[in-house]
Length: 86
Image (cartoon, rainbow, N blue to C red; front, side, top):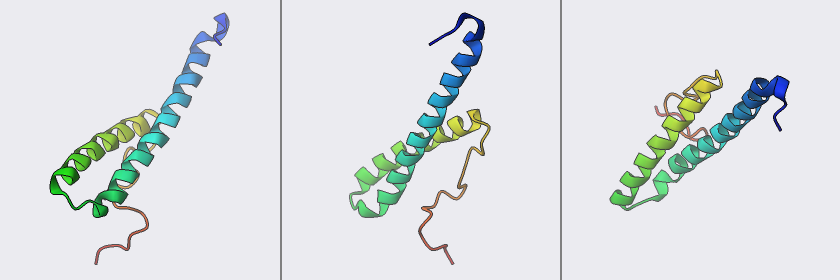
């Protein structure tokens, strides 16, 4: 609820909380698409899923930047539990 003397502070707090939650949800969406990519055998479906994943990742990057976090948490875009490429 807004208080007349603290409207900007309260609005910032609610906005910051919303962007934080949104960033977490977008990150989960991005990870889900990347993690499931190896399970998709239909190339058309995989292409569509990849384009959605890119959009999710761009959203995540913008949200992280707005929160003064590193925009690309994992610049290589790899699933964290996979062994590194050799």
